Structure formats: structure tokens, C-alpha cells
Image (cartoon, rainbow over all chains, first blue to last red; front, top):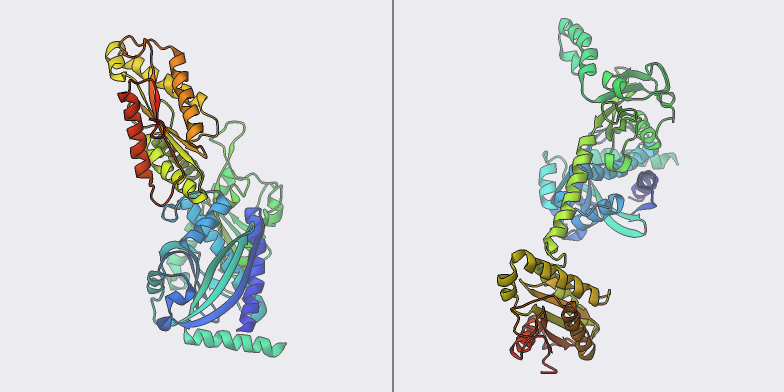
Length: 195
Length: 327
């Protein structure tokens, strides 16, 4: 887990520099904590997201291990991001086509940075779908995402994002199968073995 | 992968048709190889993109544009070629990334096209990487959103403004007053409320007609606004000929002075009003109430008592200021 946290922090650093140049202001990102849950045991309250609606950017990855990635921001945090980046005052349901596209890009930057860091460190490659954006409760998101019950695990990264001194918390969740987790762990072990 | 499933003859046919397909599409398509050499540049791009070379195909993408490759696009292409990761360059964050112009608009100075770009990784049969750029023209959406946003702003303003006088309307007052009341309660500061009404306005309306009555309402509104200190934000048309003012941090004696000032200002306008029983010109009756909100007070009670104060001013002969403190 420590190795993973480190990998994701490398990704967070890359994402922050891309985001900073995209929005022309300072963006800082860090991943202070990673946790692994069984989805069926997942206590949604444990994430501190309550049963609120979330802004979610979704992307699927295939490679040495398959994962469905979800970048989640509580409704008001997603709004803050759009507001800070675009100076928009829309409510989250009313996010226009172009604003949704922006949320997708923000999510895409963060997800790609994490995945590319993983690719560099572990020497693996992925294929991925383009991001999509939706606003749902976590329950609904999980229900929709788990098309195959083969992905009963959720790797949750807590993300701290600071845009122009304003602090926003979000989560990056990877839905994984047991074989995928095993593969991930094998790759990490072999990476650790090399150092 | 898909092409492997197509029988030989049809595959040949398909590969003949593909360049045409690519060229009739109404979006920009660029294909580059792992060295970023351009392999495909479709007609849509040829018609819109200003390039530094006579033929983009065969040239490194970096060299195609006179200002080089925009940074964010370079990173996205790198992610596709190195890691196989797709990216999205949204219009809101990147605007018109590439030098694309709509020659139908803007005459000699064609408009730059607002874009949204997808950067998609591809893998060749031998595992070599390619990257497709798919460029959409979102100019129409950008214009539409800008318009919708401006309209939303206007509607919001209209919804809160009295169309005739330009003061706040009742709805805006109903929203603001509780906020001011709560603030005064929190800070334990005095708050005054002034309600005023044009005397014998119905008679004025009957004698001088609707358009003139409207003019009086406008003049009274302007005079009230001009007489009140700039710091007073909440002044609203409360009803037909009724106005209401919130005076934050203002106690009973200050409110009394201001109320009298408002009354005198209207009287001094000397607007003729032949059917007024109190004067030959337009006057107002003023009710006011001041308090420092405590647990027992509420905004509803305060509104009721200012209404009562106005009634007393009317009852006592109009063209005067009345308050519960100085009946």
C-alpha cells in the first residue's frame, strides 16, 4: 500500500502541473491515504460522502489488470472546481455541455497522470476509454459500474486538491477484480524486488 | 481487429472508401505516428487550418503550425503515444487551441473556431503506437451558452427589479429583509424600517391619468433614492404606491431624522396634486419603527408594526412621519 501511495503521489504531482497550466493558476494535488474495500462491505458513510449526490468522471482501463476508475467529488466540491476554473455560477445539475466537458477533462488529467505514473514505475501499459461525466449518488454509481460482479474490490484514494488556496477533497476509486488486484500486487512486488 | 473479420474483397473495397469517408466528415481528423509525423490530414482540416507548410502530411506535427504545437496538446499526444491513454481538451479550458478559422465568418479577419479536441491512442498490427486527433467545432455551443448565461443574468435581475421605478421589487425585499434582520440580531445592532405611501394617490390617478401617475411614482422613487445615503441598499417598491426602506445600524432618532428628510424631499418637489386634501401637491405619509432585535422580536412583528405606524401617520392627517416611539 505504501508503494501504491507513492506511485499515486507521483501521478498527483504530474496532474497538478498539467492542471496548473490548463487553468493558469496554482493547483496542488496530493494523495494522503489509500484504502481497500470490499464493495459489499463498503460503508458509504466511512468515506464521509454521506448519501449526497456526487459529480463523477468515469473511465475504464484495460491492461495487465482491468479497472473501472471513478473520480468522485461531492456536489458542492465539484461546483467549486468548475467555479474556480471557469468562473461559472451554475448548479451541478445545470452544468452545461461545455462545463461537463471541463469536468471530464479535469478528471481525465488526474486519472491519466495516475495511470501514467503507474505505467512508468511498474513498466506496464493500459488501454482506456474516454471519460464520461455523471451526477449520481454513490450507491447508484456503484450499481451502474459493477456490471460484472467480478470487480468486488474498490481501491479508494483520498485526494486533496488545492486551487488558488482553496482546498477541495475528492476521491479516486478503482473498481478491481481479485485477479486484477493480484496482478497489481505482483507488479508492485516485482517493482519493489528490483529496488 | 474489426477488419480481420471482413472478407478479403470487401476489405479492399472498404480501404478504398475510407479516405473518402475521412474527407467527408464534418470534423477534423489528424493521424500521427509515434514520431509525431503527420500521416493523415483530412479535408475539414485543410479547409480551416492555417499551416506553416504547403503539405502537412509527412511533416512533424510540431513543424506544421507556425507557433509550434500548443503545450497541452503536446502533453496529451505524449500520453497517447507513450502510455496509450486518451485525453480530452475541453473548450472551456483551452478555447481555440489550433489555428482554425471559419472563412465564412468575419470577412478579411476570419473568426477563430472554438474547439474541443479528443486525443485518441491507436495501436498498429505490430504494436506500434499512433495517435488520432479528433477536432470538433463547438463555436455554436459557445455562442449559445454565452447568450443563455447573459439571458439568465438579465432574467435574474428583472425578477428582482421593479420594472417601472427601477427599485427593488417586493420579492427582492422579502428575500433581503430577513437577512438584514438576522444580521442585526446577530450583531445586536439597531435596525430601522421605513414604510411610506403617496397621499391620495388614487385620486391623483383618477384626475391626472395613468401615465402621469406612473411619472409621479418614478419621480418619488428617484427622489427617495437620491435623499437616502448611498450605504442604504434596500429600498423597494412594496405595493402600488407604497415603498419600504431598510436602514441598517440606524436607531430611532437617526431614523426619525431620515424619515422627516424623505417627507420634506417629496413635499419640496412641489408636484401639483389638485385633489389632495392635505396640500396642493404630492406628499407622502411615513411610518417607521426601530429596534435592536432580541429573542422576542421577529421580522414579521417588525413589518406589522411599521405598517401600523404608517396607518397612524395616515390617520393623523397624512404628510407626516409617525413611529411607535413618537406617536
